[in-house]
Amino acid sequence: VAAVSASDVWAVGFSFTCTALLRPMILHFDGTSWKVVPSPKLGTNDNSALNGVIALASDNVFAVGYQPASNGAVLTLVEHWDGTSWKVMPSPSPTLGNVLSAVAANSPTDIWAVGTRSDQATTSIQTLVEHFDGTSWKIVSSPNPLPKIALNQNVLTSVTASSATDVTAVGFLNDAL
Image (cartoon, rainbow, N blue to C red; front, side, top):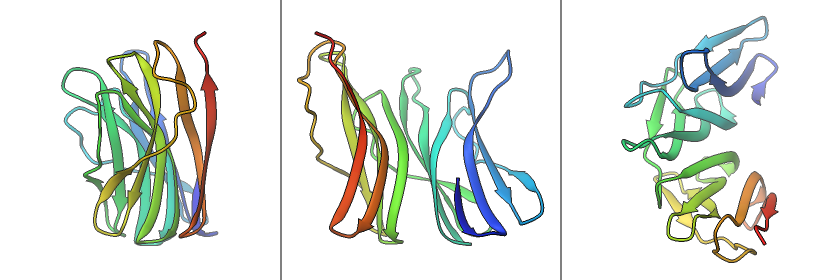
């Protein structure tokens, strides 16, 4: 959940039915009631979700999550609200198996998203950090305390940005040994 004001609040996540896979869900609170806001049409909305949202202004909101690749794996998903509609933004997906879990911002030209990427060669999970400079999203190298061996997991689940030089991400490790 992210708020511009008490009458401009956004929440993101997913919806599903017993017969369908996950689909992105976006809700907006106008100070009186919550309303569903349409999410952009993806190649397929099945197996997609939004995990985090940051609201910088009424016409500048970002949501992050994942969307399906053509082979069924998942790719990063970044959506942007421009005051009128949500649009998908290009974002890097270094491998097949990428998820963005959270987003934080210092300004419209200093936005951070964190999550995970899979390493198919080792079947391990590695951290994923992306930065938006106001023009495009780029991958930023990030530490992986556990080595790239089968089933090891280096996972980032949340991020906060206190200033342009103070960004902290947290998560968990799962050592397969």
